[in-house]
Image 1 (cartoon, helix red, strand yellow):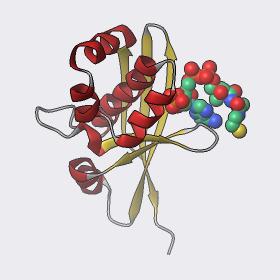
Image 2 (cartoon, rainbow, N blue to C red):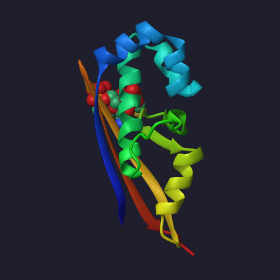
Image 3 (cartoon, protein in one colour):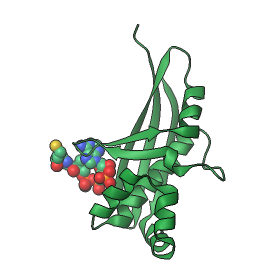
Image 4 (cartoon, rainbow, N blue to C red):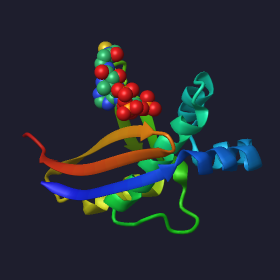
Length: 134
Ligand SMILES: CC(C)(COP(=O)(O)OP(=O)(O)OC[C@H]1O[C@@H](n2cnc3c(N)ncnc32)[C@H](O)[C@@H]1OP(=O)(O)O)[C@@H](O)C(=O)NCCC(=O)NCCS
């Protein structure tokens, strides 16, 4: 069963501006070390961050909370499999929220897909609940 869906479009040029203005303060507030390492390795740093920003926004929608003031952005994070496929992991408040919305006897799986085409970065998140096999 589907527990939640979320989508977001992020403007790469706006992220570029925020990076120029706030630099590491922005990087460290919003992105995990893994996300920062990936972005730093790439020529397209801003678009890498914009995709992950969109993923966090989309995930907060799928969790049904949106991005309330003071939430920890780093509690929703993107890693990549060897194939390049993105994986969303949640910790802290987001993990707690996910547990609350998952019915007993089910496990939650977060699906995420990312794309970008300058100046836009886009993310979709679907949260699925699967019965736990005995
Ligand atoms: C997957 C693929 C279609 C992405 O094409 P693209 O034009 O770069 O894609 P977009 O710009 O729309 O999106 C990029 C995002 O696609 C996602 N992506 C990359 N590989 C993916 C995969 N195997 N499965 C699902 N999503 C994938 C990533 O989230 C990536 O963004 P990120 O690297 O910042 O996390 C393309 O790389 C491809 O055909 N790969 C298969 C061949 C290949 O190179 N395989 C190598 C690993 S075996």
